[in-house]
Amino acid sequence: MTPAEPSSTPGPARTPEHSPRTRNVGLGRILVAVYGVFALSATARAAYQIATKFSEAPLAYLLSAVAAVVYIVATVSLAHRGVTSWYVTLGAILLELVGVLAVGTASVVDAAAFPHDTVWSGFGRGYGYVPLALPFLGLAWLLYHRPRGAADVDTDGGR
Image (cartoon, helix red, strand yellow):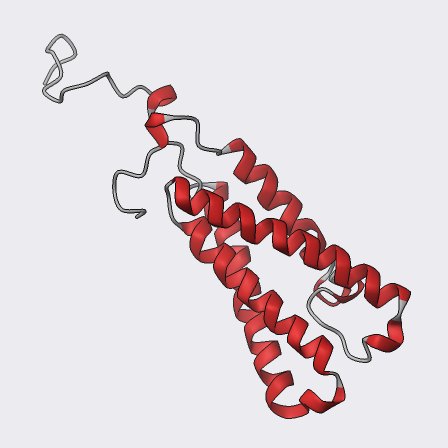
């Protein structure tokens, strides 16, 4: 088909401003990869802590498990396209932000309640404060790639 020929597909032309904006390409892939690393890391840490020394700090280890679940959900939903995935990702990242701020604050204010570190204790001190920065980066990416109308409707099953 040459540029002068009419399009064989019905409907409006798909120009870049009318194409669905995908979140999982370019820098979005890096964000998915970072969330994936944190999902694996938090899951391994929580599983080890719960399996070997749960009685020493049950609250801390359960919070590590919650962080792991949040990172897994964020990773999977961020890797998919579509409006539903966008909202699931938004919820996971907002929960992550609340978690890291609440656990970070509680672990600084009442260190005795957290005798062992979690992923989010000290605002992610044990992970180079990446857990504190990650939800802000994730929210910025999501807001930039928010659904903008009919062009963003999930037409390929979220793949």
